[in-house]
Image (tube, rainbow, N blue to C red; front, side, top):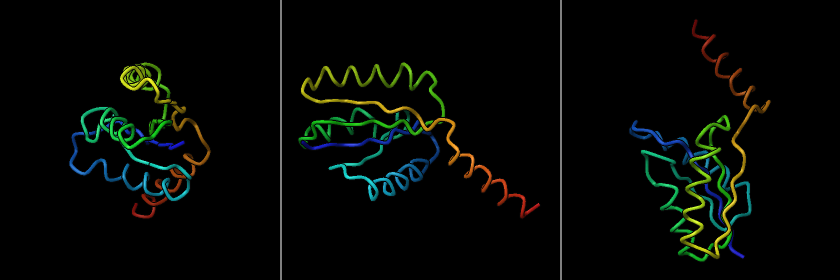
Length: 124
């Protein structure tokens, strides 16, 4: 069975904003054993979630895990993404779509915050 992972960012109008998401996706790709690991944006930026799901489905991927690259379980995680996955699932009845939780309050994120603050403190 071919599996896919989509790391789903919010999206942005800022040029190059998806570059960070692309870099994180490449790091994850090296650490997991999925047939396809791609990124997508929920809104504004390309590629869209729908486009990436369509591409993977067309390549024979049968199961896709979608990981929202968002901090909290807000409206996008609770409503918008599940609704879009439901619509996509109806277009591809044999395709399994699974949604993970968001990043959440994880101690590893706190370490990153501390690192960034310390970097700034050095220039004060």
